[in-house]
Length: 597
Image (cartoon, rainbow, N blue to C red):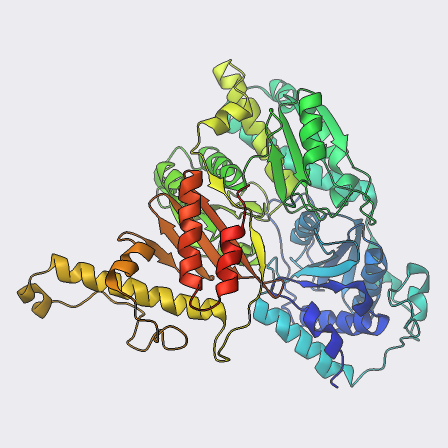
C-alpha cells in the first residue's frame, strides 16, 4: 500500500479535511515538509501590501500560521511551524484566529499562510487551509500536494510513537526532531497585536466610507463610527469569539453576544449557521432584546448568516443582493463611469431572482461554480471586473480595494451594519431590516439539500453527466423545433442552426432507448428555459429555478429548488423528478419529497 493511502480522502476540492484519527504525527510532519517545499519554491522577492499597517521587506519567504479552537488544531499548527522553520522558512505564529484573519496577516507579508481549521464541520473533524501568494489552491494543486507528500515520504523517516493518540500535543513538539529548532525563524505575535492591527485596518475602511458618504471633520467622524443599532451576535463557540467583542464594541453602541467563548467541543452543535434550526437561539434573542439585527458566524469566521428585526432568517439570496448593493453604491469609483462594466459573481445555487436584481443595479451578474476557493480565484484574476462575489453558503467577498478580497464574515457584517445605520441617518426614518427585505421578491425555496449518490447502470459516466447530456439533447430538440417554426424553408437552407453541444449520440448512455415526444420535451424544457452546466445542471424557468450537482466535499448530490410561489416550486421539483426518472426512479421520488423551507 502506498504511504498515506488512508489520508488521500482528506485532500478535498477546497482544503484538507477529515476525521481526526487520520491526522497522525507522521502525516503532519510529512505534510509540513510538503508545505515547506511548496513555499521554498516560491520567488523570494520582497512583497508589499499597499494597504497594510505593517509590511515586511525580506528576501526570506515568510509564512503565517494560525489555528481554530478545535481539539488538536493548536498542536498541529505548532508541528507545522516547527517543520517549516526547520526547512528555513520564517514562521509568524498568530495563535487562535479566524481563517480571514490568517489571510489578512498573510497579506501583510508575502501572501503565504496556513490555518489549521475544519471550518463548520463537526467536532471530530480536523482540517487545514492555506494560501500561496494570497491565493487559495485549486483542486488540482491540492491533489499535487498529496502526491508530492507521498513521493517524498520514502526519503524521510518520521517518528510516529503516538499511534494510539495520533494528534500531537504542544509539549511534545520539541522532541520530534534530533536537530535543534532554529528559534530565530519562529516568531509568536502577541495576541493583542494580531487583533489590534486587524481592527485598525477595518477602522481605516470606516474612515474611507464616512468620507465617501459625507464631508465632515475628523472629530465628527469618530462619533459616527459608533453605529446606533442593537445587535445580537452568535459566535457558535467558534474562532470569532476570540475577537468579536473587541471588534464590534469598537464600532457599535449596543451589542449582545451569544456563545462567544471558543470551545472545540461545540456544546450546542456544529458551528454551522446554515444547519436547520441552528439559529433558533439567535432568533429568540433578537426578539427578546428588540434588536435591529442578528448575526451568526461559522466556526472559522468566513461565513455569515443574518436574522432580521422580527427574528426571521434572511435568505442568503437576499443577503447576497444587499451586500452586492452595498459594494456597488459604496465603491470608491461609484460616482464615475468606471463601474459600468462591473460584475457581481454568484454561485449556481442562488435563486432565479438574483440575476435580474443585480442587473437592475447596473452591474453584470456572472454565475460561478460553487466553492469559495473558486470564487476567490475568479476575484483575484488580474483581468476581472468583479466588485463583489457571494455564494449561497454565506461566503461574501468585497473587491473594492478597501480591504483584502477575502470572504471575511465579520468584515461583511460590519459593512452591512454601516450601510443599515447610514440608511437610517440619511432618511431620518429608521426603516427596519424586515421592511427592506419585504420589498424584495418573495422566494419560496428548499434548502440546499443533500441526497445520497445513486448507483448508475453504466460505468462510463456519473448520473450528473448523464443528466447533463440528456438536458442538452432536450434543449437541442426545443431549439430545432423553434428554428423550424420560425424560419422559412429558404431561410433554413441558407442558414445554420445556432451552435449546440448536442450531437446525435449525445444521450446514448442512458436515454436513447426512451423516445422523447416533442410535446413532452416542451413540457420539460419550455421555450425560454436557460440551461447551465458549469457545475451540475441548473435550469432557470419563467417562475423559478432548480439545480442538481455533485457535492465537492462528500459522495452525495446537492439539490435546491425555488419558485415565486409554492405551486411554482412544486412544478419545478416535478420537472426535475421527470428528468431524473429515466436514470434513477428513487432519486426522482427523493426530489419530490424535499420540503420547502
